[in-house]
Length: 101
Length: 315
Image (cartoon, rainbow over the protein chains, first blue to last red):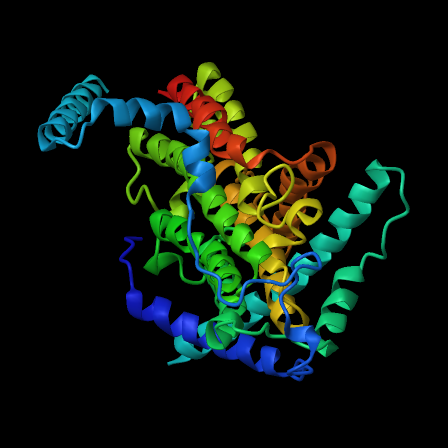
């Protein structure tokens, strides 16, 4: 049986499942005590920041590959030629790897 | 028309069955984990009681949270987990198998995690924020070995001249262990080990549970969730166990016997139980949490390398 991706079927199934899940969801308790200390975000007893901005999303990733990124930054001195050289070098390595396989 | 109605009811049946089976497996997992630690453990139906309790509790929305996203993220997580169940073979047959393949399923596996990330960032909580960041790192990590182990069966069915190599039903009906020699069996055994490690990561279980780390960041991504919103994430997690176990069952453990669908379904459930027991219960009970700065290195370095070595044995 040949497989053809069917976005319509995917979308219809998603909507159908969403409706089922939503009906189950609304059967749950929706009330809570607005305006009380209940709604203050937990921050180990400290006052949480009023508005929190998402930053350093990839912190763990960069921390993990710190040495690699340090090496990369030493090879690139904000000169476009460095980027082009790295791109061509990467392309050559990949080309030979693919040819070998 | 008849097919349409049949598929409609099948989708509802699979969704309901997936939720119940997922919660039931959760109960078994908790009992077995307790037995391994010489504890009595909760009753087998404890996850069902937990769900009922969550549904009657208050669903608190934190101050300054993005209300709409905060509420819709758990639903996205649950619905996308259920959607995967429609594409993976259940006892050899998948409802929507003809309209999506392995690549689509790998894409779909991103959405439950993405729901969690959306929810955590929208809750305006420092702990949830850190949890969301960690979830992204986790997702970046396990995708690499997941793709490699998924390509192994594809490569095998391709090199044996089968058509529709990305079809899960093709892979399921041609057991990969019958397509390789002695060296290939070594390679597939290595890949099977990687499969269980990826499964633990995909399910955010110890040692890869950095985003919800209770003792460090107070539940992390789920820190601000309660009531029916938390219940949806709870269900999504249960369904995801069935979805990922079904995927790996189709890819690597497709042994079956010639029998009617009922018996095949029982064998399928038993295999899912075995896969979840190794990939979930044993790993989470016997290991402790990785440091966040070691996680990606473990996935991309060690686990990814093991997966590539296994692949080389098969080539």
